[in-house]
Length: 467
Ligand code: BG6
Image (cartoon, rainbow, N blue to C red):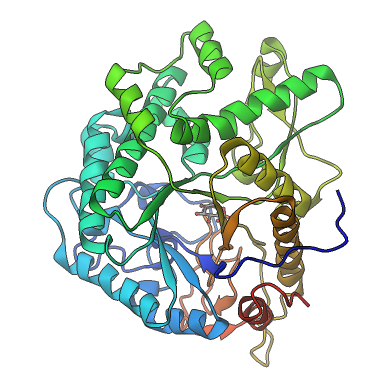
C-alpha cells in the first residue's frame, strides 16, 4: 500500500553499522588468540584469508572515532570466543577480556551503543578437533560458559547482546560437514538449545541487558503463481526462516517441518530438557540480516536429486531440497555485480512478516552493497551505487514503520571495509575505505567514502535527510 505521509523514524533510533571479529580484527594469533574454524576453512584462489583482517584489533580507536564523526548511535561487533577462551573451554584470557572492555568503553565514550554478537562464525578450532564442534552436546555447555564470561564482564555496560550470527546460513550451507542430514539437524538443534540457554543466562546475569538471535531472514517469493510453487515458498520459509525464529521465540519447531523430517528419518533427537530450555529462553527482540529476498519453485524428489546445489553464492540461497523446493534466480529482481539481489520491497515484506508473526521489536543488523570500490588518484571514493542501495532500503524501513512495524535500529554491513566471507577484500561494503589489497597490506589507511558523508547526514537527521 502507498502512503501520502510516512512516519518519521522513532526518537532514539539506533543508526550505526556492523562488523565481525574474524573478518576485521587481524592479530589472529596475538595475545593468546587461537584459530577459529573460519580461519582454517579454505578460501577461494586469488582471495586473501582472514589472518590480517583490516587490523581493527590495533586500530579500533581510530575506527570508532570515525564512526562517532558519522554520528553513529550504535556499533555492532562480535567478541571472539577463541580470544576470550583460547582452548574453547576452561582458562579465560584476561588480556582479551580487557581488550573488549576497551572497545566497549571507547564506544560509550562517544555515546555509541555497543551491540555485541557473542558468536559470529568463529568456533574455536580446538573444539572442532576435540569433539566435532556443534555435533556434540558438549558444545552447548562450552558455549554457555563462554557467554557467562561475557555477561559477567560486559553485562553492566552492554544493552544489546546478539546470540549467534546467521545460525540458519551455517546450518543450511555448512551442514554437509556433519556427514548426514540427521547429524546436520542434530548439530543445529544443539545450537538452538545453546542459544536458548544463553538467553536464559543473560536474563539472570545481566538483567539490564536485552538479548536476541541474529539469523539471516528474508521473504520467500514463489517463482510462479502455481499452487505448487506457493506451497514450496511456504515450505522453504519454514526451513530457512521459521525453524530459527519459531524455536527462539515460541520454543517450538515448525510442525510441518518436523513431520517432514520425521517422515524422512532425519529429525533430531530432542529431549524433554531441551524442550524446557527452548520454552524458557525468550528473546527480547529479533535482530536479523537482510540482503535480498529469495525465490523458489517446487521440485519433486527425483528431479531435485539431479540438481547440484550451488552453495557458492549462499546469499542468494541457491539451494535445492528434493521433494520440497529449488531456489531460482528471480529475473524481476535487480542484482549487484556479485549476483546478490537488490530488493528494498523485499525488506519491507520481511519486516512486516517478522513483526506480524512475532510481535517483538526488530533491528536490522546487516544489509548492504558489496562491490569493488575504486580509490581515485585524488584519494576519493565515489560509491554512489552504495548510497542508492542504502537510501532505498532505509526508505523501505520507513514504510514498514508506517505500516506499524516496531523497528529500533538499522546497522548495515559494514562500518568499514573488511574481509568478505567468500570474496576477500575486493568485495567491499564499508563507509570507510581500508587501503589494502588481497595480498598487499599497504598502509591500511582509513579513507572516507562519499557514502560516509551521506550516512552522516542520515544519522544526524534521524533518517529525515536521505538526499
Ligand atoms: C553475512 C555475514 O552473511 O553476510 C557476514 O554475517 C558477511 O559475516 C556478510 O560478511 C556479507 O557476505 P559476504 O560473503 O559478501 O562477505
